[in-house]
Amino acid sequence: MSPVREERSISQLFSDLTTELSTLFRQEVALARTEISEDVSKVAIGAVSMGAGAIVAFVGLLALVEAAILGLANAVPPWLSALIVGIAVTGIGMVLLLMGRSRMLMAELMPRRTVDSLQEDKRLAQEHLRT
Image (cartoon, rainbow, N blue to C red; front, side):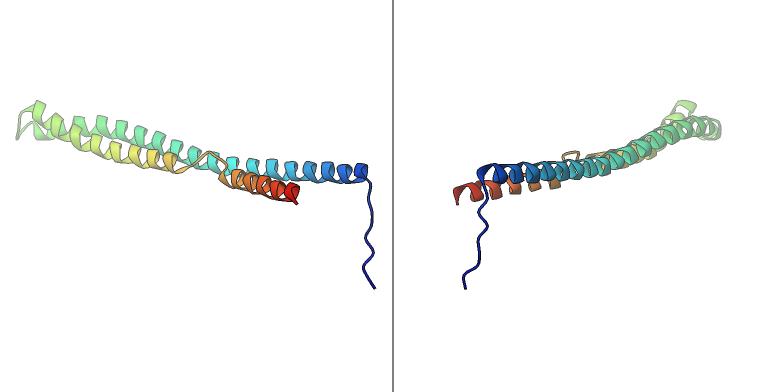
């Protein structure tokens, strides 16, 4: 026996196509939202790290410059003691800022999985239309 093929009208086929495309579109939008929210979280963590680094560097700069000027003024001229401590504290602050910046640069805001999925959908649709 040969399998029975169900014959469907053009309007039924278009109706099914519309339903399936609508479902596909909703799924792609949901994927994009998920990807973007993950990436925004990474950027927020980097921004908080940069802010904390800037605050710590500033407070440290103030405290250490004052302590260095008072402490090293006995051994070297006051301007040299302030310079030495200022360079050290600024270096620590820069390390913290660069760490935060690198976290922000690592976060890619383009929803790559969604783009890849849409390209695959396009390729499949083109193949299906050719057959």
